[in-house]
Length: 634
Image (tube, rainbow, N blue to C red; front, side, top):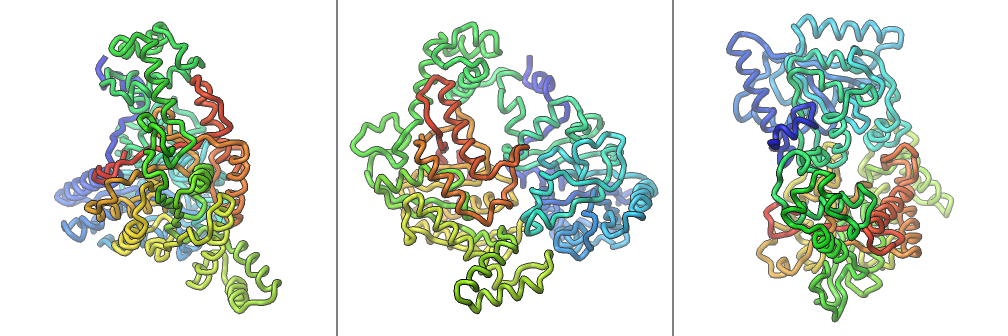
């Protein structure tokens, strides 16, 4: 069985995987540009279906670049957008009319009369007729030639939420709560997110001649896998794209990580059995069968598609012991290294016995969500720990939290600042952007929450730094642009601390997110400092704060947490009061964010237990990122 034929057994939609989003959008932009020029040469125009949200932004920036630098003209292009929130004006900062102007239309030569976006301000009585008119306009121009799509965590395309079938057309829909939670920060709170939207239907989308679906980041991996490999169902509208004759998914490596060809490559072909892949296969087999690593036998391998591995690297018992030892060696109660110990098989060095440790948190709370227990250990063991918050996190504070804090200040004795904040909040509509002063006040809320959380981890206030990087202070969610000032500020911090250890996150996040932007700044800062002597002695450990833990085979350092440490972690996360309604949930139970984080750590401990290792209350996990790799990481 060839790798391609094995892949086709699982994948019902052609999927193209790229190293990163930029490489993918460059390819799509070239294909769109070729289509535009081909139509122009024939005296015709191209009809583009466009999407909103953070996913297509890199594509729009590349098309703008091609317009400015390569003369790509949009004069004969007609566009139809997928959707618009219902009940908000086109001037609203989160309307898709405004989004498209800011992200594309204001920067290219497309005539205004050739731009079509669903109208969000028609009355309920008029909405059906408006949707019919939208469908008619698409038909009048001969249909959509190329449709661009993103995919939501519910599997929606456009705003076709679960329950949308392949016959659906442009219509008014009710938004799923998870979709509204994902938009909560953009709208300064879930209660401000519209409950309804106007969207093209799945059937409208399927009528397009060619479809490109774009997906970036680890958070999209599971829904991408389901849409590509599972049978079409109304609970996953994107899966109906399997019925289209010319559709392609363009994915970065993180979004493609759950596809069978990547997650279980031995099922689609004959991979090279590297030590990491062998470890992945053996741990997967152990968990799948519910048998500890040391109890697997040759028959288990032979009956589950990995006979080649045991033939090449067996017998089974020897392979089991090797993988057992590899997994066992990741476990350490000494994340900063154990002094005067043999560190041959430990994830961290014994020397220096006391290390300078720098924890980089994109926003306040990312650190304690993922590694509060490890932070407590590092402090307790006497390491010189500094926690730096790269951004203020002010955009994530709802107005009602700012009002609560200002009321408290005024009640405690009055404050000119509190009075100013309350006055602005009284005059401000739910959709007005915060003034500089209000954003600063909200940043004070996040700072105090962060200090309270880290105090529970044993960290003194003078070991906490707030960088307030410019990309965040000058931007807004999903529209951040990093620059040299960001890199310079982080480089200065790294140079001043000269850490032996750095903990950082965001390596596989959505490229538009605060976490991903922060990680890109870190990469550039490290590159800038490559010639510094201390870099050679610096270990960089990646943590994950988005609720999706590393797979067991990836983990290179696992830090057990005692029951008391787990309680302190929950208390530390709980200090971030302003974020309790702002962090999107990852399950249907609507649990508090601290419950999700603790359950994730406990689930990891159960995995280790099932593999036959020691039983722990909870485990925090890390993967080492090698600073000598040029922007490649692990």
